[in-house]
Length: 111
Length: 116
Image 1 (tube, rainbow over the protein chains, first blue to last red):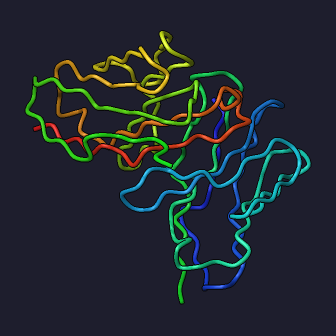
Image 2: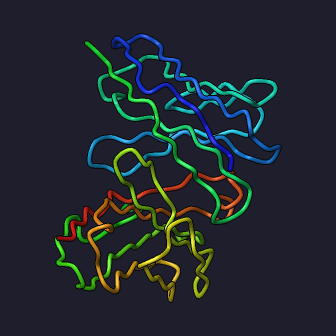
């Protein structure tokens, strides 16, 4: 099974950039890398996804290593609302076997 | 936009009772799925559907039934609830491209189920 490894927790200060790492050494060539975040008592919220190239959207940037065995979610300026559990997951290119969620990284943001 | 709507938000059942968790989406998504989230276990796939009339089992299907008679609705049925089914249940949907990974999954806010 395709798996990801993330640090259990990270801390940041408000308005500073945050780099959340993820290792996925068993990734296959067609597996997409997705990031979701989850606030307490809410469902996971989509953040960003990519395959090979770096990606940017209004929420964050995704930097993917050249060998695709790791990636980094970048929050450019952390806010208190960014405090959440962040999940890095691989979407295996086959319906039903997708979304293997690990334990995620709990991000704390201080003012 | 409503997105993915799950009802009820909370439910308490006695062992052996049955119930249906409702999930509806208004985005015309082909793919819908159910997950359960337990402490320290992440999200685990229960059942999924790639379109109306088509369903299949995920990682932990035992004790749950699903059907997909319309594109919008994907109910999850517990036929005889057990304490091991105490969990938070999430429904999610995506466009067809989401099955291959190139489209985001949209999640509901969950149903917290307690079986005593």
